[in-house]
Amino acid sequence: MRWENLTESAEHGRADAALFGADAVVSRTFDTPEFAGITFHEIRARSIINRVPGASRMPFEWTVNPYRGCTHACVYCFARKTHSYLDLDTGLGFDSQIVVKVNAPELLRRQLGSRRWAGDHIAMGTNVDCYQRAEGRYRLMPGILAALRDHANPFSILTKGTLILRDLDLLTQAAEVTDVGISVSVGFTDPELWRTVEPGTPAPERRLDVVRTLGEHGIGCGVLMAPVIPFLSDRPAQLRATVRAIAAAGATSVTPLVLHLRPGAREWFMAWLNREHPYLVRRYERLYADGAYAPKWYQRRITRQVHELAQEYGIGPAGAGMPRRIREPEPEVEPMSEPTQLTLI
Image (cartoon, rainbow, N blue to C red; front, side, top):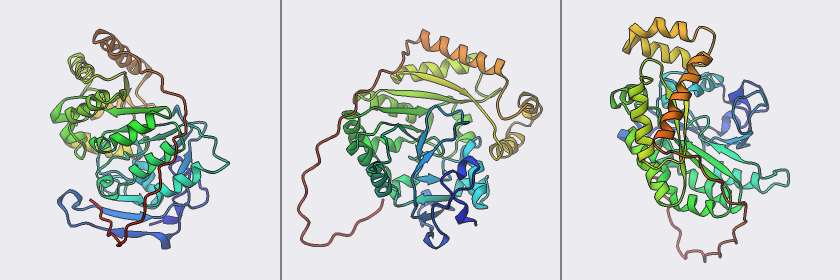
């Protein structure tokens, strides 16, 4: 396992200085049903704010990823390739070998306070989900959100996890002082497709409950309708059902994204397709013959259909955020007279 190869830009295929050394890795397993068969590799990272290469299609420049690997086990996840940089398997290994940057909150706070940091927008959940099941045990996000709040640093989160509601108070506080963007990923509402394609995620209706709850607390939430899976979730009736459910949940916006199959994800997805829907294999080979992305004509067709449905159901654009305002520091709390044992859930 090439721990030294985990670099600040390794997920983008470049070899920069290692973010941590092999001697800093502690591997753990937990004897609980929700973590059966999963190994957590706890590391102390040297950097937590990652710069996205200029050639990337992403609409943001900086990211924070407290985890690598993801127990959501989505068969199409584009981030699978990143596990190969550690000599880890991009299939089952990606789903069950989770790298945890245990010092992410304090490291982020230090980097946000550096004179070199200009307060740019930080995106989270863009590589793997920061609210995957591991977060329930490691609880890294409360510290991360508190640091962003205290520095009034704008940020966004994309998630399939309902655990984000645990941090509702922190999100509300952050939204009072800076721009906060929350999006939930719901590509389809078909329960049978969900069980086979996204086996480790909360059900689509539970994710839409997150959208609804955030809205009820004054935090507008958009939906990334991703992925739209060719021949499995793209029929007009399926698109209509999904957009209707998104609208009913009170989403501020809906953005469709057609399935893309990058190396690492492509092999795993096609193996799944061959098992579950072998009659579609040749159609996929033709549709994705030119690379990772479906043809432009197909993407434009899906986008047009979803936008028309969004207009029909009254889904509007997300509103602008509030300006940056630094919060006053919290009053210091007197230390407790006796030591207290911290616990992880």
